[in-house]
Image 1 (cartoon, rainbow, N blue to C red):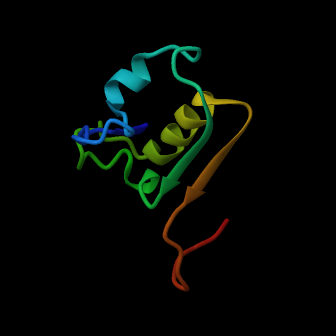
Image 2: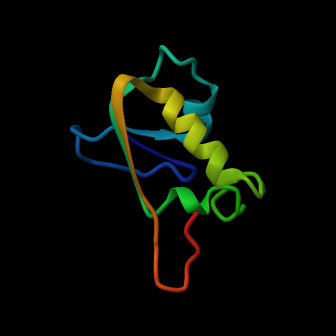
Length: 89
């Protein structure tokens, strides 16, 4: 399953897609996953570029939403850009 503010169109029956609005409106039990992977995307949440609302803490809110969707004992693998000039806390 892939989730995005701009729902991707797939012609491959093995790939399910969903609009972020539907995912956020669903209850915890409706959509829970063994693992969630976010590669260089979560840091864009809250910037308003992809039909998402402006939110200076959008990346943190998105991480919270993702974690809620991970089954107990599951994994959330998150990769974000990191370079020599980036701050690390």
